[in-house]
Image 1 (tube, rainbow, N blue to C red):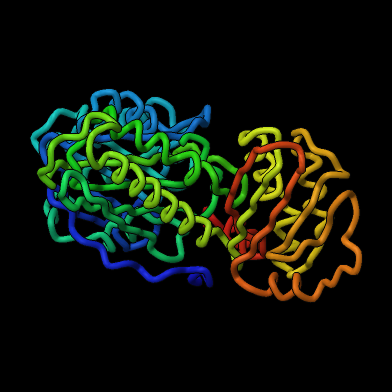
Image 2: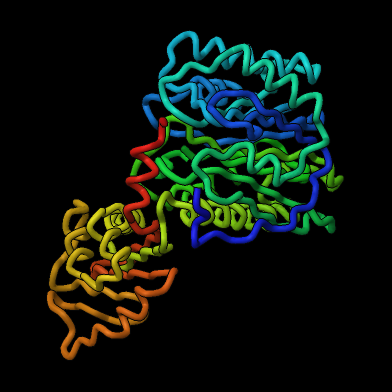
Length: 407
């Protein structure tokens, strides 16, 4: 598959103490690449997570939800090429069997093993292949790096996506590394997108969960490729405690705010990488809405603009059709006043007070739309509410990829 023109280079990522990675190849699909990832985590690792709010979740999502209150993790297993969603009892049994095999290999309770799967919906996870993948990956623990893991969790991704950041906690530098997959079926609501974050921070599971939940809104829940929420969306964050600083248990602890900010920054980096790899994408689009009656209202208007096929195809064609933005604002179902609305493409004001601006010159707008990073701003003129969403354009490539997805 052709690499996205919006792709970024794979970053240099440091190892995280307390994390070992192994990958394996099994024929979930007709490919020879690695597609099972096993990650061993140090004893006492704290875990936090958010999952899809889809009413048709995969068994792996349901198992994650059941295990997260325990707050501790020893292993993570990820399957690519088979989402195991909508597969009935056999799918649930396969997911449980795979987690049990991981627990056996790592010498831990299955309750400390987390799972995720991504791929075609409606195809049960083959138990024999799932178990063989665990065994192969376990035999290779410590031999794979972040790049190998990022490749192994991908499906229609055109480039491996990862990010890193750090924070000073109690005088100690802690590191955060995140890997993510996702290209289509992207409109996370939770939190086919899977994201995994690793840190050597020492933190209580409750505070780690609080930080991740706060980071999700302006990052993973502020992106959309095609308005479709996956049955498998999962973001899990693991903190091994290897950095050695005093355990963080409250946001009042020294360094807690720095760690929370670093986690939020990492989540935003990862979320934007997913949009950059939107299926068929050629442009990254940032939609900003201000002047709404509330932040929540602004976010819904921004999503209406970002999810509009007419807006997205206009951007793909470099067409400065600001009327489509007016349409998307009007259909959002949120308070809006035509005669107070103003719209900008890039830095250029194109419409305000219910009409095109006097002397409007389309040339600077066309120049902005010719670039790879596009900014649309709508000010509703009603209140203090603000919202921001990222999306991508809609091209023929999206149709081609998804028409042929199962072949």
